[in-house]
Image (tube, rainbow, N blue to C red; front, side, top):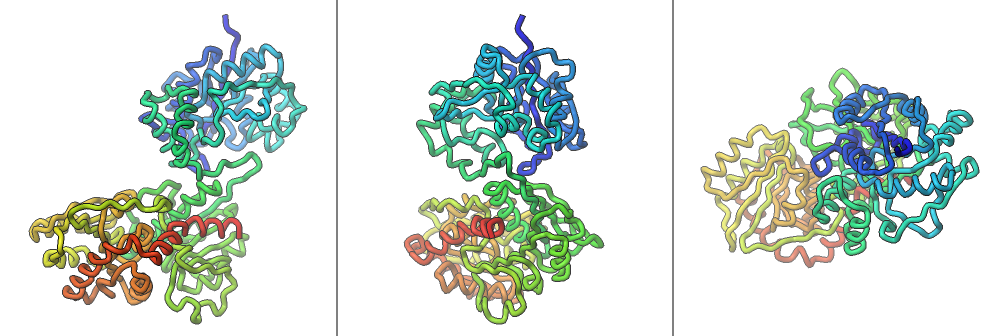
Length: 583
């Protein structure tokens, strides 16, 4: 009869970087099932228990695990050590396996070998041979006696409470050791094998696709061999920062407005910045959406906890006192006095592209390229101010250089933002019906989550006999931009995305301020203005602008000025994140 070996999986839904990740599907099954099913392949493990929290949010996780016949214990969220005590109640074995619930490649073969090493040497814990770089993540075998020692001698030590075996690494003399040797087939330095971000999920799914095996049955030597042959796969998630035991995730709250009347650019921008800060600095993010005009907006694809704010609740009242940083991207939702109150609570405040008095009250302010930026703009400012294309914030998916594709027909991308408050889409379609180019053209029109007239636009395009494909609410426009020759876009965040992709554009502006900003793009050779305000759209001028953009698509790819601006914008979100975190 085999000796008892208990595997304890610590898991919860409240991950600070990727909430709900335990049940997120990877290759068609929840992450936690990957971990459980791989542990069930072990020859030594005799029981598996999931130690989760007593929070209501973890009830769904507990129910899912129990449905697989796995025992569940629930206890304190911050005190993981106390959950291990619950999991080992009445346990009679000599060794345990600590397993993290975010390790989809946890290796049952290595676990068995580690157990055999410790058991034969009759020691508490393992140490690695210097110079060996195991690819393994997510498990550690240790003695039940060592756990009892933690519970008796250091039950309230922060590292012991949160990381359990992390205390052994900080205090090696606390336990006895045996060297755990790793064969060459399991050695690889630099691979992220755990899941903390969407990029990590993409990495796992890509590995399975390349190996051609069913999840969760990938063998560690096969993964090592694949990564040695194609190290470019590491680029999928190599930008993600691995938080150390000593790090505490900074809590960052983002406040933005969105909806049909104001569009979705503010939400798109804070979501982009939040993604970069999570991946690069392991921040714990929450996005507060202020519903414009009392309207609860239809959410776009957001990777973070979202809280909707409606009158009479004030956005800054919802921010908890343990928040470290508040980042504000709004038109009218909060005042300069609100910013000062947040600062008075010890919260660091940042504003994005803010023309109000909030800019003179915050700690830090960021602006993309602005006309007449210095002129009487910061008379009373105490903020650290950063300005230029290199501080434009766009989705990090645009960080990689564009891979433009060439077709025999002209391809025109049309995007009027998340809601098209000016009704530009209809006017553009009517103008396109009179457009004659040297080559035949086709159009792709993107309709956002706030569009009220998508059906009418489809009917109009059909009646005008314009070749238009409609795409509703794509996750991003990068692929569409890479296959387009030029774009017709509402000036805003999309204009910066097009510039990052070196895509010539016709800018449809909402007001004179937008037109002034768009003129800078025109002066740089990035595009042309199709309309300065929605109330006066001259079809002849718009036709001229469309033909000018058509001519630009032949030369933009070799323009050094455009290439320089593109590079700056593509790094904008990372530059802003660096400044906020590092000062």
